[in-house]
Length: 417
Ligand SMILES: Cc1cc2nc3c(=O)[nH]c(=O)nc-3n(C[C@H](O)[C@H](O)[C@H](O)COP(=O)(O)OP(=O)(O)OC[C@H]3O[C@@H](n4cnc5c(N)ncnc54)[C@H](O)[C@@H]3O)c2cc1C
Image 1 (cartoon, rainbow, N blue to C red):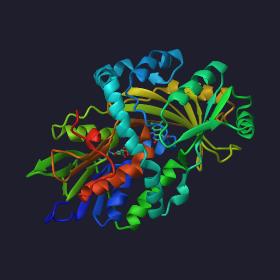
Image 2: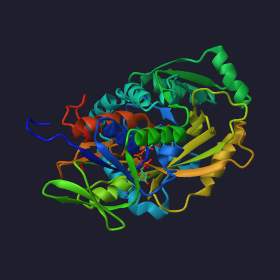
Image 3: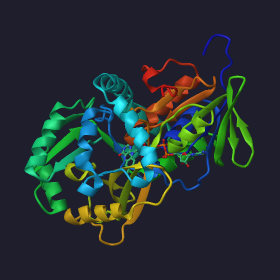
Image 4: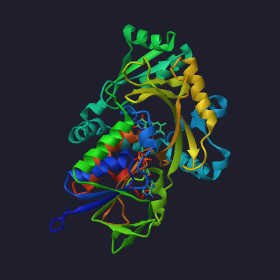
């Protein structure tokens, strides 16, 4: 804040997923009277249905020629996890074009420097936020496993991870005991197991959302059940128009509405090419599955997470619009992976589908918008929203108070498109 500038007194946060919740809690804890606006009382979006992996090893943006080159062999109809539904071609084709533009060597390197600087903040920020919210046990820093089922997959996978930048995380070969424990769960010896050290998990995404929401209320924050129709700027100050015709105004307005953020920014004339990367999960009671780190079955592009609420298998990236019916073939594919791996999913597991909010360079939009002095963005967290929510909230709060954040925010500019 510049000298003589008035400190902000109140805030509106649009969107009650994990990013919005973390921002609202952080702002309320720092003394701003904060209103969290979301139409859904029972929120079941990506922040609820994700795999709960604190993926601090993922410092390389997915906007890269290596990712693009891998798409043909990873297509759904070839047994892979990537889907480009023909009905949504008008959405994913322009996105693909921008993704291609963001994937060149120069932009990839710049993107990696930026993403790494953000991901490095993730676990320390989660430690602080979870402690402040009385939810410290909800975060566990015990790494994760990557498993291969074929010798070829294990060779290629090990080579990949040996050469990849994994930030503050490291890898080691799994011990005999660790391999034995996984073999006992899936009924056969895997071809290779790598243990990641320095990554983390949440014990249960839904429970974590609920705990942060409760801490926000206990700190005096207010939730308003409402859909934001559009943003408005007058005299350099943003306000929020609700579907019911009401208008909300505050010293700080934070847009953290996941995929919905695109339309809201569009209402201000800001080009925000966000796409829904829809993922699917199945969840069943955990039965005898022990409390342990997530397992990534890399050849299946599937992650299996043991939560307090049950055992969850998640997969797929389906590019398109957030709305639209789910593709039931994806649950059947998950079911068949589960059967191959003897996961306890035979008694009617719960089916879920939800959307990752993704921008073409695979960096979130984070920081102040040039459209209004009081408008701050925190959306587009793609595959890393659970990982980056607490760090994003600290950055949003620093920005609100005019404190210089501990990283260069220019690569995350909400106006960069
Ligand atoms: C299958 C799957 C697995 C994943 N696994 C992981 C993982 O292991 N680790 C990880 O870090 N990330 C993971 N992710 C990604 C992560 O879940 C997302 O990045 C994250 O949940 C995005 O959070 P968000 O708060 O930005 O958006 P959301 O959770 O989508 O929340 C947005 C909220 O905004 C509200 N909203 C939208 N429009 C409006 C409006 N106009 N007015 C008011 N409110 C509005 C919505 O109702 C919603 O509640 C996974 C995602 C999927 C789909």
